[in-house]
Image 1: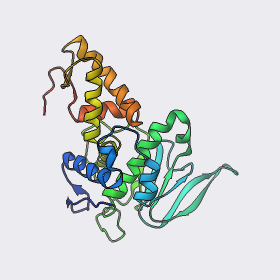
Image 2: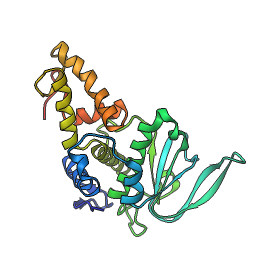
Image 3: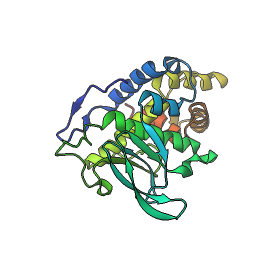
Image 4: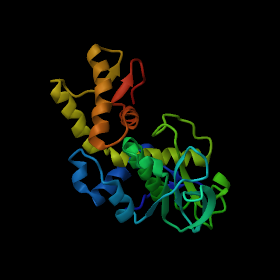
Length: 255
């Protein structure tokens, strides 16, 4: 497993640019499945999480709130789950390196969100083990009344929000970004991007919404194609394309 080489804040949150997370994602893919950098496709998330990161995955109904889709245990501890036989809450032990996923994500229509949630939790493991270390006096104590877990909430995949007022918000945004960068790595995304333009006999370019009927059409087609190609939600694919400024709004400042 490739470690992320970066500076850290006092609370041991990675201090890094998002472009560096894209670079890190490519290093991970090169180490795990190098062909995935050249050929667009659905990454084997189960294999990445369980065999590459060596995390243990369990499916349980968590009692941390209806919007919690997954958690990662960074240290040995306990978590409250629903006992499916008694339908009562119970506290179970969890060990370091355990990822617990809400089983409702196993429904076929939720598979893209399942894949993203699992990679989000894997990204926490890759980026935030130091932040959740037991000997970190500035760690994120108090999150869900527990210092040893990081949780994935059921909000829109890969938030557009720039809000990062707390360490928790910063970690969640970093995990979302890295998860997206691994599932849709830049080199493979470029290949898939060019494929769409080739079908329409168009030259690959940045799409500007509102600039032409063709661009507006492509702004709809591209996320759908990327979602199907990489096995993610259309929403996640759209935000990934927007983050890379492949799709922008008319008048939006280009990076």
